[in-house]
Image (cartoon, rainbow, N blue to C red; front, side, top):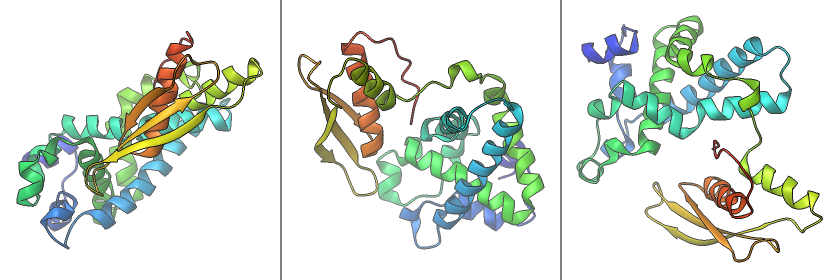
Length: 227
């Protein structure tokens, strides 16, 4: 716990809050889900305020896309790995054996739970400082030029510009347990030679990935930086 707190740059007065933040629901009813809920809201607010201040000329859509990039599951899981949160997780035996400590969904959730725990243990000013420290390099790397539209929006605009019908997204498969599902979505368009597919841990992510594949098939240069 001491090593983890040094990595986080924050020392808990109540270490039970940190333990709760690290406890997955597979371990029992005393878990991190409520802290995750709180941390998610705090993170979105702090990042939104940071972007609002950093980019005074940005439009609402640009700010929303930049925020989505920073608070998406993949980014939070990357940060969780930087702090080795997976090595500190408290989990049920089944989840542990299945490699849950490496799963993006679980790592991103515990990262948000720690934010919630720090807020309860201290105050908004302190957790704001922590989040700014953790996200500093990623905030520095942002630019308005990179705040492009997501894949679905870009595909829609591409088709509309050619007077084609809007794309159709169809869920063709859902696999896995209820808490760890994988969606497969097919994207269909009259301009595509054949339907293309995308996968993701949510229907929205799978649709975005399918749209990215469609854009590639249509010869549209697009950085699939979304979700």
